[in-house]
Length: 156
Image (tube, rainbow, N blue to C red; front, side, top):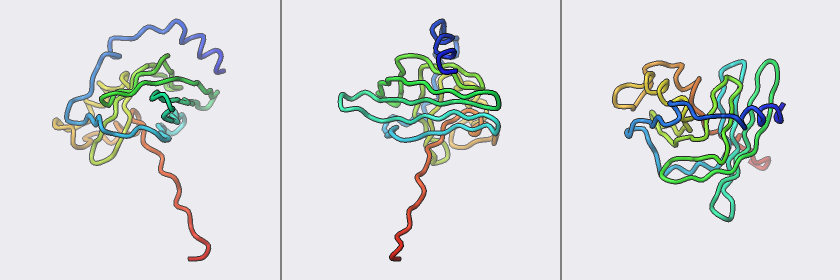
């Protein structure tokens, strides 16, 4: 399936919403984006595994899937000023397609926001961006950082 998705993305053209920017009050340019990020809507998911390389770029492993199929895509990213720009677009199972993600902080929580979802997230936020007024906004459009499970020490 990955090959078919890549072939489809060969013809991708950015939609007008690709140039949308999140409100300044939620942008978080200092955020360290390395790690694993997940977006889940119940029956479908998307995941990002982001690793900084020695040359200052980011290796991005993208996975998405749902009831019918799943796939993985590999990308290279550049991160500056809270903006992760991928060398090629990705497509979520949902489907949203984009090349840009923004580091944002809402209600004290770090997220990655795809450019294709900025308008939808803006609709679900309070005017100052400090909290959600629509509980589905974060669940449906924002990547959350995965937290590694705590390890226990058998000697404790």
